[in-house]
Amino acid sequence: MEVRARAPGKIILAGEHAVVHGSTAVAASVDLYTYVSLRFPTPSDDDDTLKLELKDVALEFSWPVGKIKEALPESDRCVASSPTSCLPETIKSIATLVEEYNIPEAKIGLAAGVTAFLWLYTSIHGYKPAKVVVTSELPLGSGLGSSAAFCVSLSAALLALSDLVNLDFSQQSWLPFGESELELVNKWAFEGEKIVHGNPSGIDNTVSTYGNMIKFRSGNMTRIKANMPLKMLITNTKVGRNTKALVAGVSDRKVRHPNAMTAVFTAVESISNELATIIQSPASDDLAIIEKEEKLGELMEMNQGLLQCMGVSHTSIETVLRTTLKYKLATKLTGAGGGGCVLTLLPALLSGAVVDKVIAELESCGFECLIAGIGGNGTEICLGASF
Ligand SMILES: Nc1ncnc2c1ncn2[C@@H]1O[C@H](COP(=O)(O)OP(=O)(O)OP(=O)(O)O)[C@@H](O)[C@H]1O
Ligand SMILES: C[C@@](O)(CCO)CC(=O)[O-]
Ligand SMILES: [Mg+2]
Image 1 (cartoon, rainbow, N blue to C red):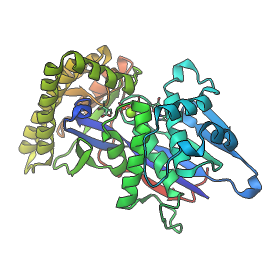
Image 2 (cartoon, rainbow, N blue to C red; image 1 turned 90 degrees about the horizontal axis):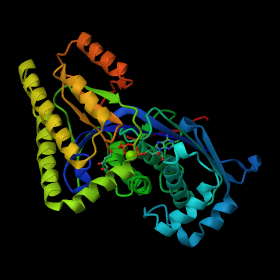
Image 3 (tube, helix red, strand yellow; image 1 turned 90 degrees about the vertical axis):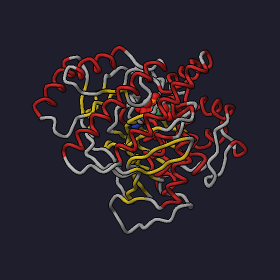
Image 4 (spheres, rainbow, N blue to C red; image 1 turned 30 degrees about the horizontal axis):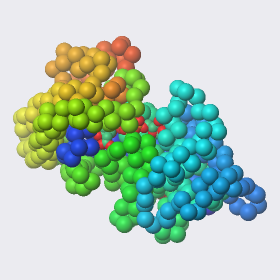
């Protein structure tokens, strides 16, 4: 039996980091996906291993299921229907299975992803042999929610072939889940994100699960609908960073300066709410759109200033800011910052020639630019997919 699941990456239009501390953030899915294929061997395959192939980083893992059972006995597991956090002792036990593979130092962030895989897999399917293959269109560790897309697509594939989900096996196209199934996918993905991020707000897995555009605050999502064209240039600075470390850095700064940081988070709350209101409000003509774009750009610049206060900007991000400012374009980092990806608002009436010039100038700095579709579907599955 085989299934393929996909889950989109995301951009955060406003509110990253502050959302971890209870402020509102606004995020949208992007049409770049992570794909997970899951296949259970037939008895004639005579295969007693759990295999994981991470194609993007050219790594393959294979554990005999007996070995997984030894490291992670039944008493440490939980049940598929009620997502539970992986305890620190269990993370250590799983780490023994991951460490065997001597992941190269440059790819060490991947160990957390593999640990999340083993936790999600064993929680949902126990010690059943299987082959899981992961590929992604997203740059990993760059602010576009690759960890969430990984956890969501994995949870979706695992749940699709569990007893908890009833699917129509006659269809061979991408299909959405029902609401209650999406809720379960999202909860499991959040548990995976906790292993990768330490202390995630849940916004990334939620927007990857449900797609479209959302407002998110303290674990609660509100769907929002854009009432204006929204085009963003995404610049990948290609400076590697790690979300867990950046999130921890902001929390440390909050401990050192509680009043100042609380004021920063409160300001972000106002920015996110105002941004959501502008995006949703009707615009009758070009003039109204231009007015809304000017306000959005200003809010993005203000948010970027506050992210700098939080200590998560980077010289590469500042270079993108300076470059786009020459063209009077507003820019902010997206995701955890510290490098990674940066958003630039492209007004609807901006000429293609100017966009080409900005992209050429950014790419001459060694950055990579892309324009992705914003606000598409969330996670979907395709049954009977072939490897
Ligand atoms: N396709 C993939 N294959 C293997 N591991 C992946 C994949 N996608 C994500 N991961 C895991 O997620 C980690 C990157 O997560 P991280 O949260 O640091 O960045 P991000 O999610 O891309 O950015 P942000 O959280 O700022 O949106 C990787 O180191 C790896 O553990
Ligand atoms: C930095 C952060 O706010 C967004 C990362 O995409 C972390 C989180 O909300 O979990
Ligand atoms: Mg992440």
